[in-house]
Figure 1 (cartoon, protein in one colour):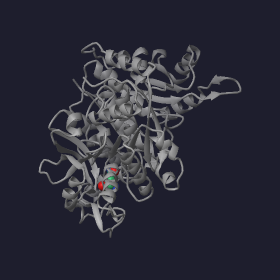
Figure 2 (cartoon, helix red, strand yellow):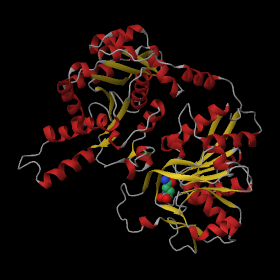
Figure 3 (cartoon, protein in one colour):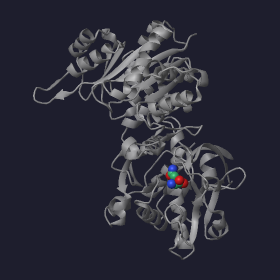
Amino acid sequence: MKTKYIFFTGGVVSSVGKGVTAAAVGRLLKERGFKVAVQKLDPYINVDPGTMSPYQHGEVFVLDDGAETDLDLGHYERFIDVRLSRVCNFTTGQVYAEVIQKERRGDYLGGTIQVIPHITNEIKRRIGMVAKETGAEIVLVEVGGTVGDIESLPFLEAIRQLRSDLGRENTLYIHVTWLPYIGATEELKTKPTQHSVSELRSIGIAPDMIVARSDYPVDNSLREKIALFCDVELRAVIPMVTTPILYEVPLLLEKARVGEYILERFKMEPRQDPDWAAWKDLMLEVKREKPLVKVALVGKYVELHDAYMSVREALKHAALHTGVELEINWVHSTDLEKGKHWEDLRDADGVIVPGGFGSRGIEGKILATHHARTEKVPFLGLCLGMQLMVVEFGRSALHDDDVHSTEFERSTKNPVIDLLPEQREINDMGGTMRLGLYQCHLVPGTRAARAYKVDMVEERHRHRFEFNNDYRQVFEENGMVFSGLSPDGRLVEIAEIADHPFMVGTQFHPEFLSRPNHPHPLFKAFLEAVCEHAGVNYKKAD
Ligand code: GLN
């Protein structure tokens, strides 16, 4: 079978859930027995989002192979339950870097290098790599940005060409748009959708399906109007009303018969009937009345929840499987430093300090860690959160305030967290951290080992600093347990506090491997401890 390609473009406005739509369509096809992969094309010039501020871009999602990618890759992995690779995300920056390098090497034999065909050919080459690398039979390609952006044009031109390169029966274009609601007349408007489709047509792409996002129910007359004006079959105009529950989207698309339509267009038969039983159970669980627990998430980008997307999702997965309703108290660490919003921290039955870089808000996070340790509130520290748990513990164990990570205080007397030796000579910022999957050996009898129930795990990393082994012995003597170590024993991967209901910090990012139907064991164990602390009934692990 020839690889099939589905291209997703966005119209009208950004942030309407193109990534979630692509992820959900991927799930529809996986449910029908096909191997799928999803790729995101990002039109910005940065080589990857690794060096971008989370305020600009949200979370950086890390893959097994250490690629630092767009947060949409997180949606793809969670919805489809796949592990994607580096080829599944690329940017304009990478495309140009490659073409310019080839030009400098003389590969183009004196030719003039142009957007068409050189840049577009490089884009097409990278799209073609997904099937080769992942063995996917159906590749979903999401073009970032919105039709009409100058910087998306080469990507759109490349996917336009792919229809003639690969054939009509092997390509499908899905355009995701937005129907604005006019309050004065109480109606939804299709005009912006019509305009964005005509813009898409003017560059040679005629969409096969339109997913029309809306905050209000879309009646049939609107669908008919879109079908007529945009020249799309009526059954391929799919209204997608905003749902507060992200994981309902595949079920909504299933109901709209999107899977059938795609396979029919590809002239394919499903290999199996979709089995949505587990997803439906999940939805029932979401909608069921459950006891409430509150977790404080203490970070410095909390105004932008997308900056902690995977942490939030992993908490939600764990809460669903623990049978409780989760409320996150978003606490700004700099507020804690100013003595503000402590009630949001104190009010919570669990504290989570996620990853981060740079010194702003560090002391506030340390205060939150101190609160969790001394008040015996369940705590989960992720990467930077683990490092600060070590700093806070060190200040108390060594009876000295001059204890820090050298990331924040180069000349500290007690550098309990220090640069990884292999990081010392590195000057470039992009793609140079300890990245991706590494093994972690679990020490029997510890909280971490009890949560995972295995001896060895592999988790995703993204850090330059690590626990300084000079302090291992004195920390152990004072009640810190090193429950996860690299297989050679050299790196501390998990630390926990012995005399505490649940205080665990991981040098890696467990949140990237949590799935709606398989919550991450550490998040699950954390949530159980939160329930114990809150005194609520919960579903115990089997
Ligand atoms: N800034 C810390 C380090 O580089 C933590 C990184 C993180 O939280 N991802 O080690």
